[in-house]
Image 1 (tube, rainbow, N blue to C red):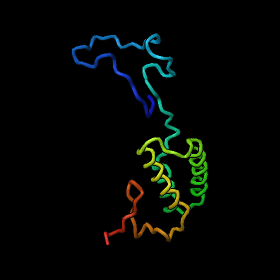
Image 2: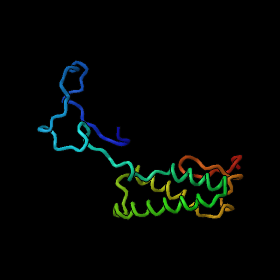
Image 3: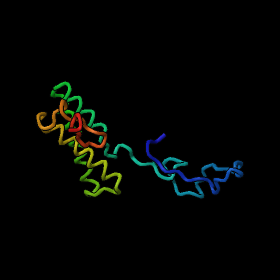
Image 4: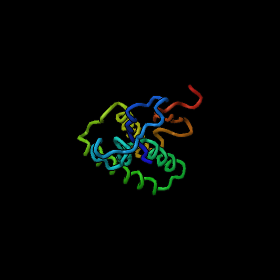
Length: 134
């Protein structure tokens, strides 16, 4: 099952129409790479902050330089992807993901003293909150 997709319903989704034959018919729909799915998005091309967030925590908690190398390889991939998409996000959700992802890249490559994990907690969206709320 693809991670991100769009499907078309039968001509009627009414409960009283449960016997309708919803088999894929290539004469009705254009040739599809994945029959039954209207669109299958390439999930590998989505920029998601969770992966670099994990690398950020691994780097900060272990101090192992290999995590910086992993982050740099990831940065090169994201940079290449963003450049091939003509530098524009397709929608607000994609733009939000790009911004959150960039926050974590900034944190990975900044000095650990800039944002001490002893003094700050980082929310799911990449916002930093001072421990204790002060």
